[in-house]
Image 1 (tube, rainbow, N blue to C red):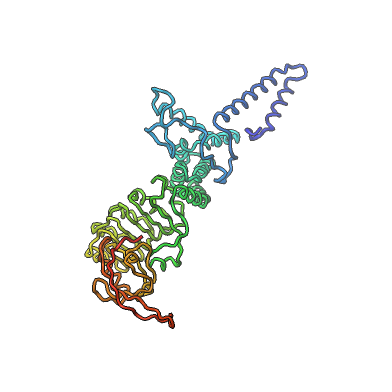
Image 2 (cartoon, rainbow, N blue to C red):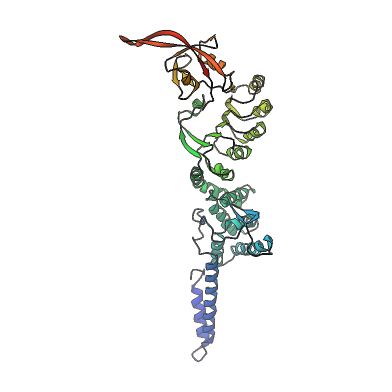
Length: 463
């Protein structure tokens, strides 16, 4: 009896029939009605079985509206057309065009959509259940129907889009959310307002699903200690929620479409020759992107213009990427709030000087890319750390050594050392004169300067 809004009417009808037949009448009318009713129920049951069983009630909760990830209706695919995340590859019958195959399916979908305006709960409920498992084929028709359907039916269609949108790890989830956004932007209407409320309701679920999906594809998304060269002060900490896309990422560019839902990531590091404009188009849609690191990519100045879509960029770091002076005008238009670091690019010193004029108020750090591999405590030149595998370590420098000169030039501060190193590219060498402290057995807390030593260091790349 689940297919009827008012099941009591059936018994009343049968009762009336029996009464009209009278004691001396024939029961044929009653039998005909019973047979007709049984045939009707069997027909509906066959349709439901053929199309896949209902999975949930027609409820306003978008999560309850979500279909199974693998819709039961599957058409053979064709390279001519792609629908959502699935393609229609080979047509079911030889000699038939794709339009000939798809049109009956779309006709059936449009009929189900129309049933959502029925006065009968049975018809509405069944139509909703039949539409639900087939987002790939139905998204376009559903979006189109929202504009003209009566309000209750439009809300049911919006809930369908919301349910499909909670699966960003498949193509139809992204397509459904894009349709939902278009409805939300369609104007000041009850439909637009309802679509906005559905979007707000599924946002957290979308973010969680998107993050887990990208992690499975090899993207690093987690807290990380990352060298940010002064950006730490802007973010107020030493650990940051980072997205890193490099050679370990096994997904496609299309998979990155769900980045738009991840609002926990503030820092992104892009590394590798695979990174191109198409990747950056998705990265800039991260809602809370604040710092972007670009390393060893093929991005050019024309690609960097995509960063203009970011609301506010705290810092930008481009390393070993072929950005040259032609990118100056583009870089000057970016919504940069604080700091830019250009390291190992193809920009000239004159170009950087012009960029500093155009970005007055922002700090521009520039270097040819040569990396010594040491850190000092503040501005003094006593080595605090020597990076493992760096040119400094290979040349024999140790923690505690004090740098005196570089290429014969006396140094007093760490900034002076960094300024000299900025003139060198990876693979070039510099001469370092340093002093190694000598510890006395009876006074190990107060070492004295030993004899100065000189080493040649081949500069590497910053890791």
